[in-house]
Image (cartoon, rainbow, N blue to C red; front, top):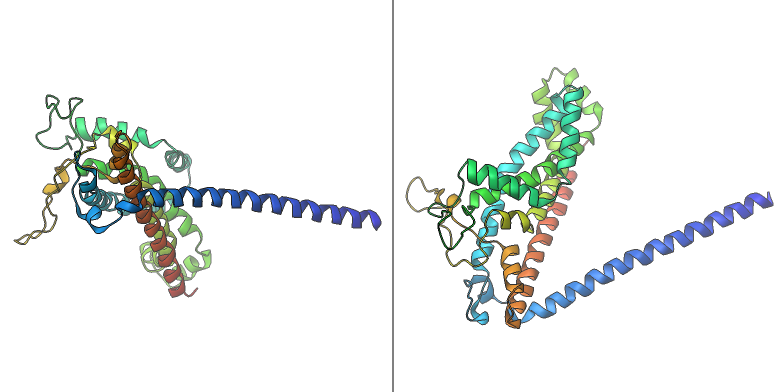
Length: 319
């Protein structure tokens, strides 16, 4: 009995030491992140104002340089990314989880989807450079290899950028959809089938509503990753300095929608930050810090929306 008590006491001490070690590591990571964020906010605070958000860029006067154009371009790119990745990713996840037969082919597809989620993002940029720009010609109209502004080849458009990031996000959406569907108890499916529902009715009226919180969380987390990507956009020719807003998607005359902006050249928030950090003038470094704060706020806002949406959707579900 004494040996058993000593063994239990030793195990408790080990658990206590391990817990304390884990807590120290966690606090170190959080403290490092807080210090970096505070330093970034302090550096960019002098430029965080309304004029900075609503002004175009400038290479002459850092005080007049703003992030309006890369901010609008980033939002439009996210619009294309969501429109391309969400329907396809959710449909693929539903098919693989609920419809596809379990054989070597589906196992091969599932393995490759999991591997694609870990592929470096620059490879998606190289894929888009060859497929979208050179093969499908989704480049900005009028920009050719002879143009001195972009001598390396065709410059990518907003459509090419959105599809590139959609390819990056697609494996994340598929995996999130499948995991959300797997979390639904099997009894839900069996009860629906017992009442005579078809497979599509089970998916549409039961599985998708019950799994919508997890699916939405995966989608927004994927978009949060995409909004900060730089390498794929650099590969397809994102502009580090651009002074022209794309045409508005909404028009005052019928048909009230315009898609001309899809083939416009673009910049983006990560590209603008990178460009400013390369400037030797310290004032542009302040602009880069302010733009980074705005990008972090956008990313955290997307994650906050995911948390609130998941909470609200789960409250509406009664198993």
